Image (cartoon, rainbow, N blue to C red; front, side, top):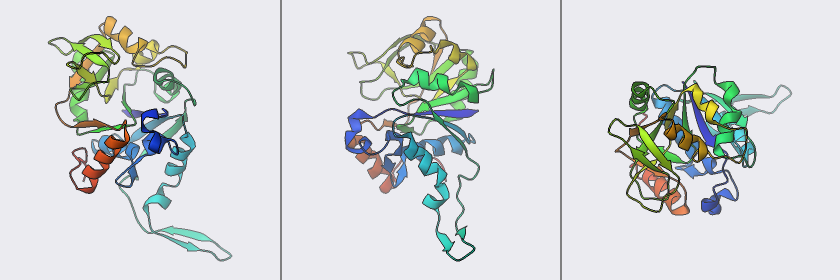
Length: 261
């Protein structure tokens, strides 16, 4: 299954960093947060990535284009027959990364719609945001999605509010999706979704539509939205304080999302 990561937003609440770089490129322990997210998926064998680029997307392209330069010691021969020798190998050599321009100002639903050509008809795919890390069990979420038989399964959790609220029945089905509710007691959408190809049928040809509004609300109304509840660690990086928190966890070797060796 391919992994689609939304990497195009401007991250206005993290302006201290995102004024200079796209949010997925904000470093945690010296590596961009999108790298950490990709490592989570790669740990479970999912090595095909599609990054939905937008704001300052060229910086993400530059990072992956020069990945060996960024991760290896290098010897350069500057003579008449110049050559480059990279001394180190890395664990990301099996990664396949598609860098897709999905528009400077597009909202999330349109960004996903724009990468439909990279997902074969009938092929399910994984989908998440480029600014949150977790110790989620990806295969367990896929198994729950298959069990449900629904079009989309998102991961729910109970961190502090300001996110979309979910009403979930006893079988895990989502009966209501509400973006940023006033109350704080409900489970919330933390991304790490599993989607059938039919999700594209719910994405209008309108760059102003957010996935978290009309599409997910319609899926819930059609009883095609499911949940996989995660009780473990999940942390977004919406603010400078949250960035510092994640960076401190990494530097102190206490990062719960580092499930890879």
